[in-house]
Image (tube, rainbow, N blue to C red; front, side, top):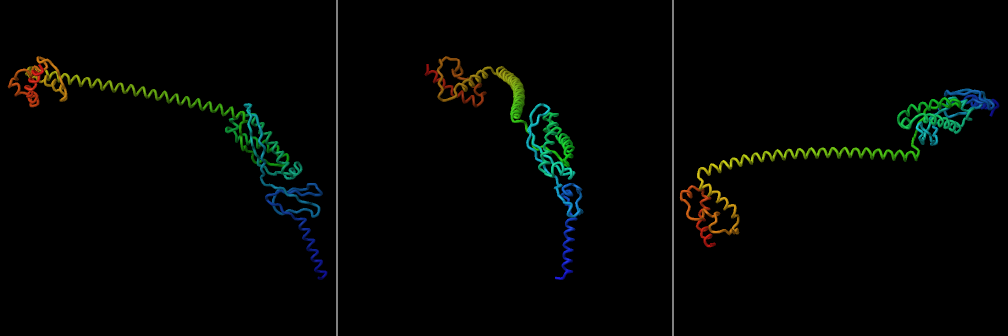
Length: 317
């Protein structure tokens, strides 16, 4: 190996070391601080190639991405003097890397601890002004924005930007929860009882109306039936009167035969009467041939038993 080649190699190595010590690259996900003998001389937020003094300056990199601070659950008192158990978190990132390094020594754990305290104080202050309803659902977005702005203002003191503050969980204190659940249960029971009472009242009203309609319908039907029955009785009476006026003897015979038919419904029927009873007055003696000829066939058939009935009545005597 010649001296020229050796010298060239040494020069290349020296140049490489100089370039390595002079040029540094900042990633878009990072922020960089330039130190000179342990003292901050420069900081870089923009990504790309940068230069520093070789062998004198040193570079330290810090994560510039959004970080999460997950706070421990805390007990807060609302404007109604009710305790709430609140679990929250915050999203943050480095805003001023030099200030971040000076105030928290560039440690995320220190930054999270300070941020947690600021979030806790701001939430406690906001919750103390408001009722439970606003905290749970009403003005939560407004509360969170107010807290974020307050915490961001304080966090800027140690080089941090607060991107967002959110509530993961809001619960009543266990003792308060038990009382609230009992009150809700009592309220639901009261509403259920009221609804059942309204239903019973409506059912009673419907039944009463149905009974009234039934009574009206039955009364109308009874009145109509009585009217029809009266008309039928009138027609029947008129018919009987006409029949009686036309042939009184035949009418009496016809009524007696109907009585016989209604009396003797079975072959086993037995009627014990005196021989001279008026019930069998038409079985005594002979019937007028003209009257017999004028009777319907059914009545003739009944009258044909006259002799037998007379014999039976005499034997009974």
